[in-house]
Amino acid sequence: MNIIFMGTPDFAVASLRAIHEKFPVRAVVTVPDKPKGRGLEVHPSAVKKAAMELGITTILQPESLKELTFQEELRELQPDIIAVVAFRILPREVYTAARLGAFNIHGSLLPKYRGAAPINWAIMNGETESGVTSFLLADSVDTGAMLGRRTIPIPDGMTAGELHDALMPRGAELALETCQMLASGNTQPLPQNDGEATKAPKIFRETCHIDWNKSARDVRNQIHGLSPYPGAWTMMPDGKTLKIMRCSVMEGALAQGLAAGEYQVVGGEWLVGCANGTVMLTEIQPEGKRVMATSDFLRGFRGESHGAFA
Picture 1 (cartoon, rainbow, N blue to C red):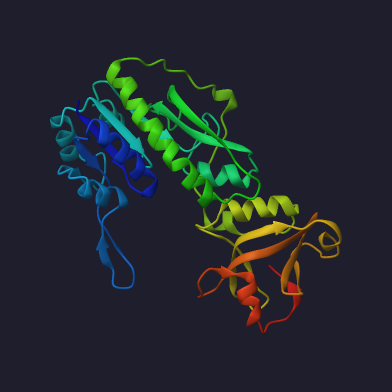
Picture 2: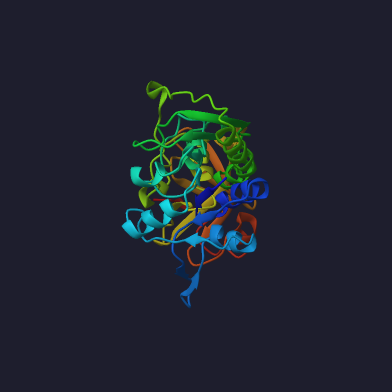
């Protein structure tokens, strides 16, 4: 059984390991090595590093999946199955090269949250449930017939990073199960209901700008949905950017009295008003500094204890 695995970040590594342990994987396709850090040292993707640790010797790193040389190399591998986890959009010439089918593991319960950032948008929109879906690749992104899914609850206050980590092992289980289904010919593809589809577009800087004119719960969801990366941000009165990684919605008397965006430091707590209610900042990243507990930051805070964010 020739299985080709395509992926890039940490999220895909667990799936690669699970499939390789049972089949194994014939070849890996990932992005080219990229320079990182101050020294611009070239680093491989998380999937390439895992592939080398697993002893997978055939690793393809095309600049573009439309390269004819890459497509010829792929066909020469005679793939039976192409498994895709957290990778690029595959052109038809690539995904149709698999004899038994090409599938993707998507970080949502399709057809909800089609797009590049399903985990972030699920938290930002206050969902109470999420999961992973395996589906056959089609010409339109994230629209193919579904092969399986795993569902998990989203506890109140969960961040996108925590949901990402919770979904990773479920995605690995489902990736292996989908390979087994395709290999045995025991599949029952279920078409997606396009009428139930929602979008999860790429996150841009403006998406991360905190809108204090939302309710306290919506502000909390925006902050947690962008934590730890890329991070929700606001502007301090001195013009510096403040990223907020975690906060809690205040109840009772502390939930009243501050206008939207107005903040107050009182009793070692940093409270911020929203259109409806108040949040308390619990984890932040001041401009040019590391992520830290708000209580640690406030010990050395010399700014105004009352002001407004922009």
